[in-house]
Length: 83
View 1 (cartoon, rainbow, N blue to C red):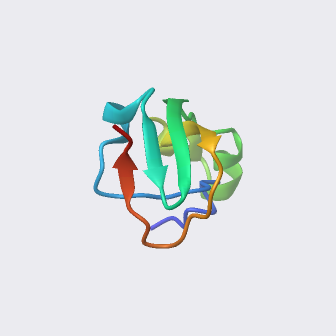
View 2 (tube, rainbow, N blue to C red):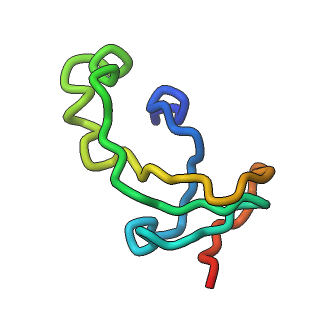
């Protein structure tokens, strides 16, 4: 298993299809985010994971998001679409 900080992720979630939320506002803790585009891995993955590291995580980089409303996010906070 690769640690999230190795992949340079700011927020790691599970159990939700983020692609289905593209362009929608989502609440995480007190913050409101909007998922914008797929986050492609950077060339640092070769250094962090070794040869072919970039290719290994291509398509698994998660999503970029813009902060609509800043707020505190804590471990275990739910990720919920804002209706």
